[in-house]
Image (cartoon, rainbow, N blue to C red; front, side, top):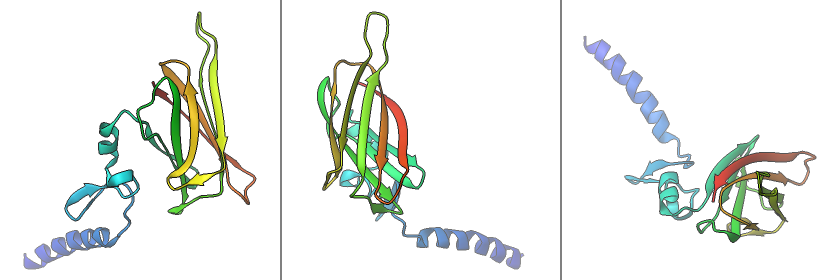
Length: 162
C-alpha cells in the first residue's frame, strides 16, 4: 500500500514541479501570490484590463506572430489612437510596416464608411495609428503588417462595437 501511495505521490509531484519550474511569464498567471500578466500595461490580467475601461484590447495570433491591438482610452466617435505591438518568439518587432483599415458596410440609407492609416514608426508602447470613426455601431477591421526580410504580408480581421 505504501508503494502505491508513493507512486501516486511521485506521479502527481513531478508534473507539478515541472510546471512550476517553467518561468515563462506569458499570459495571465499567479506571481508572488497575485494574478498578473507582464505583457499587459501595469501587469493587469487580461480580464482586469477589459474591466478597467471600454478601451479595445485584443490579442491576435497571426502565424508565428502575436499581435496586441489596443487603445489606451475608450473608443469614441471621432479620432482614436490605436497601439499595435507585434512579437515573434517573445521578441518585440520594431521595424514592421502596419496598415489598419476600419470600415462599416453599406446599409439601407447609409453609405459604406471606411478609414485607413499606416505606420512604420515604433514608439515605446508599439506602433501608433489614429483612426477616425464617423459614427457608433459595429466596425470591422483589417490589420496587415509586413516585416523586413519577408515577402509575406500578414493579415487578420475582426470587429468591435463603438
